[in-house]
Image 1 (tube, rainbow, N blue to C red):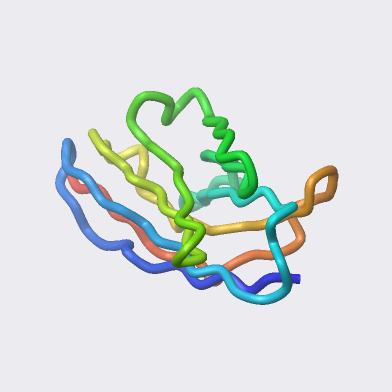
Image 2 (image 1 turned 90 degrees about the vertical axis):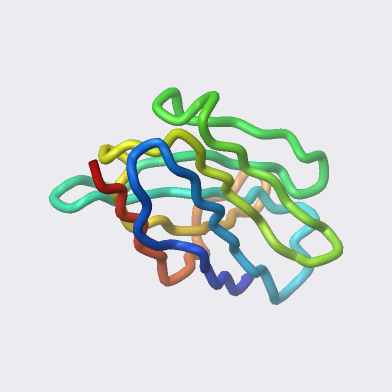
Length: 118
C-alpha cells in the first residue's frame, strides 16, 4: 500500500494552466502505475492519465490528450499533472491513485479541487 497526498489545485481562468502534485510514500512502488482521475459535480469519477513508475510510459484520456502531461520524479517520489489550455469542463476534484502492475486502483489520495472560470 502507498500513501498519496495531492496539492496544487485552485482557481484559474479558461486558457490558463495549473500543475498538480502527488507526493507518494510507503512501500516500494517501483512496480506501480500512478494515475490521475477527476470527478465533476454530479458525474462519475473518470480516468485522466497514468504513468508507469519504472518505465515512464504514459497514457491519456482523449479529453485531455495534447493539453495535460503526466510525469514522475523518482528522486522526489512525486507525480505531476501539468494542465494547460484549461476550460470550464475541466472543473473537478482531481485524485491521485496508484495500483500495482496488473492490479486495481486500490490507493487514493484525498483529492484537490480545480475550478476553471469562463
